Amino acid sequence: MNYRQLKYAIALSEKKNFSVVAENLKITQPALSKHILSLEEELGVKLFDRSANPVKLTPAGEDFIYRAKEIVYCEDSLRRSMDTFKSGNAGKISIGVTPFRSSYLVLEMIKKVRNKYPGICIQLHEVRNEVLRKEAEEGKYDFSIVNLPVDDALLEIRTLEADKLVLVVPNKLKHLIECDEGEIDFSYCRQLPFAVVSPSQEMRQLFDKLCISSGFHPIIAVEAVGLNTIWAVARSGIAATLLPEQFVRQENTDGMTVFDIKDAKYTRQPVVAIKRDRQLSEAVAYAIEVLCNKKF
Image (cartoon, rainbow, N blue to C red; front, side, top):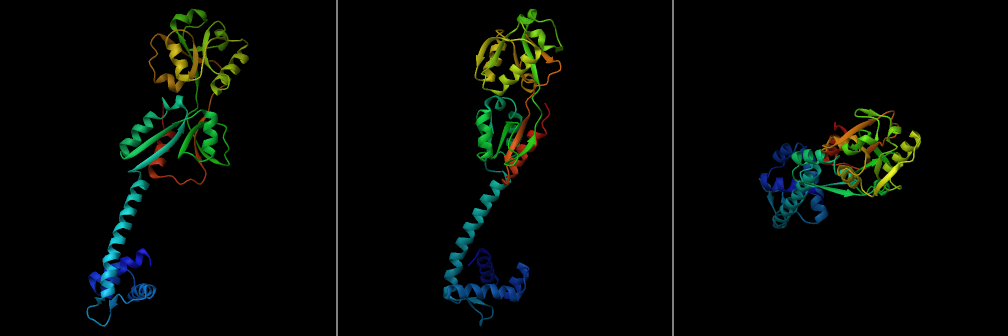
């Protein structure tokens, strides 16, 4: 017994005519008769009295149709519910992202997704990048935003705008460098105090490489875990710092000067990472499209 057989039997109980029902269902009359006969054989009872004109239900058929309508109603409701989730009108989008990127990269995407799919709940799982790669490979989230490199045998990637690092200097510290604005040679920054993240983090490793290539050991004034903390330190005027330009553009930089770094070689390349062969809902696919087409 299957959903199609139930629907056919219900239709026949209502129209009481094989030819009419077959035409409405866009199948042949022999095919309809075969479906009904197969159902009766499976159940071991006759559902329709074919000797009557028009066809009528047997007592067993009346009870069957009553219960079949309940089953079909429940299945139709279930299908509608699942279609709602599939279309993105309900459900959740699970995103793995670092705490820093969640503060600036995904906000516009969230607004657009919520406008298009108001029934969606967006879950941001804020995780350190090194942990995020592993969890992305395990398929823990609908998608993750991580830095390259990743294992492309396990993950399908969509490239985002690269993190261009800029130097942010409190104006009260500008007397320590030989540049007023625009582009700066990083070797001019040897007298600046810096706010940096811990050595285990990728942003710090980029900073250290830049200092080495510029030929000086930096003055570390503050070392913290989070980039948002580093930004707060720089905003307070205590120290300069390096941050992605995309983040800085969206912040209030009154009392600070932002410099491009001359011949900057060290950047981070973020990507949207999706577990290979993962089926994406309409809403998830839209969220990824918004992120990948975002212009800062």
